[in-house]
Structure formats: C-alpha cells, structure tokens
Image (cartoon, rainbow, N blue to C red; front, side):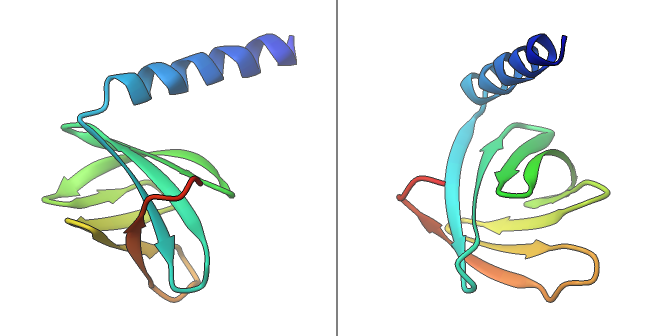
Length: 95
C-alpha cells in the first residue's frame, strides 16, 4: 500500500513538472541545492528536505508553512523558520 501511494505521489510530481511554466535549479551560499517548478499561482519546491507546494503571496514570492521563497530572475532567497535567510543563485547542475 505504501509503495502504491509513493508511486502515485511521484506521478503527480512529474505531471506538475510537465505543466510548469518554468523550471529552475538553485544553489545557495552554504551549498544547499533545490529546484522549483514555477506555475502561475504556485511553485513546486524540491530539496533534500522534501517536496513542498508554495502558494504565491506576491510577485516572485511564494510560501508554505515550512518554506518561504523569493525569486528574482536568476537569484532567490530561501527562508525557513529558525534559520538565517539563504541567498541562492540559479545553477545548471542537477539537484
């Protein structure tokens, strides 16, 4: 049952990527890497800590209970509760 649920979640994630307006990968100053699939009203955020759907809260600003993200062209700021803001730049390398 768990395998079936994981497969369904994976398929939904790929469908979300296929329908994205833009996809980008970022690397932060501390080495953390993440990717985003940008849609008109949300972002699918994928990092080593998990996959999150962030709702748009302003132009270039997205948020979930776990993560906040600001994207400005090839730069971003990653914000998590209790952590310093991370400045990140767009990367071509895989996440």
